[in-house]
Amino acid sequence: MIKSKMQTLLDSAVAKYVANNSRSQDMSEQAKESLPGGNTRTGAYMHPFPVYIDRGEGAYLVDLDGHHLLDFINNNTALILGHAHPAIVDALQARVAQGTGFSRPTALEVEMVELLRERVPLLERIRFCSSGTEAVLNSIRAAKAWTGRRKVARFEGAYHGVGEYALISYVPPLGPELGPADRPRSVPSAAGLSPAIVEEVIVLPFNNVDACRTIINENAEDLAAVIVDPLGTGAGTTPPTDGFLTQLREITTDVEALLIFDEIITFRVALGGAQELYGVQPDLTCLAKVIAGGTPGAAFGGQADIMALYDPTSGPPKIPHSGTYNANPLSMVAGLATLQTMTPQAYKKIGSLTQKLGGGVECYLGPGWGGSASNCSWFTFSGPFPADGSPQLP
Ligand SMILES: Cc1ncc(COP(=O)(O)O)c(C=O)c1O
Image 1 (cartoon, rainbow, N blue to C red):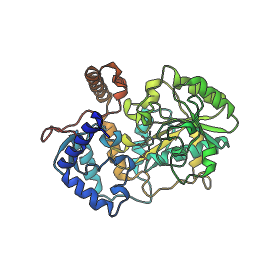
Image 2 (image 1 turned 30 degrees about the vertical axis):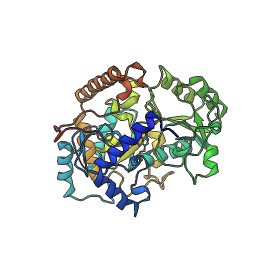
Image 3 (image 1 turned 180 degrees about the vertical axis):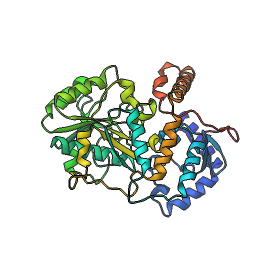
Image 4 (image 1 turned 90 degrees about the vertical axis):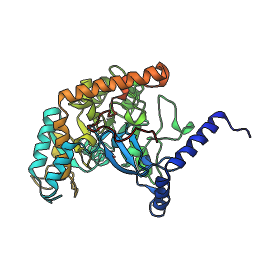
């Protein structure tokens, strides 16, 4: 069979990649002896092997073969200040010698929560946890407990971590089992999910308000919550169409279901996150990534009366919620250093850099490249250090 031109180009790019990354290739072979696939994050794998990272410096990654790689991902948007920003390094170094975790609260979590409440007034009460996955599962549990209902609606293709509900219709296989575009079916995206979960998750099409209204109304009696990533970041970053989030708020209010904003990525787009940007008031919000300054940390919160489900002061709480690393002092100081550095001026600067980047991509690829200047907004394009070598793509 004659190879297509595309396949020939691809083969030559892969051969060049393999030749340029011999240390990463060796590490990948060694890693596969102990880690399935040679790593610990599905998204970190690429064929034939990923580059293994030695360190991060500002806007760059340095891999095992010594390449300086301009990093547009910044640990999936967690590092809004770039790698090893001095404010975060200093805060962590100053704190680490005072202990790395206690089974009692610290004043740091109070400082952090007050800063978050200042920026997001709807966060009347907050609980910290260790990952976005936990923030999502806790907010869904709170919604089910608050409403006494059992179903949850989520958008097809959105990423909400790796909890049971999140793994329905996240990356559904293309084919007839998806159902019609305006009535997506609930399809497991992982083996091992209970059939009850498949039945409890309602799948909605993003940016199709009429279809959302119909599906939500049909499930009104059982529906505890709708969870939405306001910028559809899991599905290639799909900004909401005009009024979509506002109408979603109205529809959920009509059926007395809670609206959960998963702002785990979008909290980086403005001082008060996407809810400030779009002027929409969710009942519960999930946060992670930037709020922990690149360390493992997350939070969820919202209306005080709903969050009282977690309050242990008058007997056992309705929802027990523990976690060895919840509100860990290191993630608190790293998060505080990040948020304090992210002043309104800093958001303005990132916004204008984003426009510049998006505009440049648009000029280069033309208007049909499938994105827009505004949907680059979750990339970090800054870093305090000059490159110590010329940037190269992997
Ligand atoms: C929108 C969104 N929700 C949830 C998560 C899960 O967060 P974590 O990886 O901290 O569990 C992610 C992670 O990328 C995310 O982007």
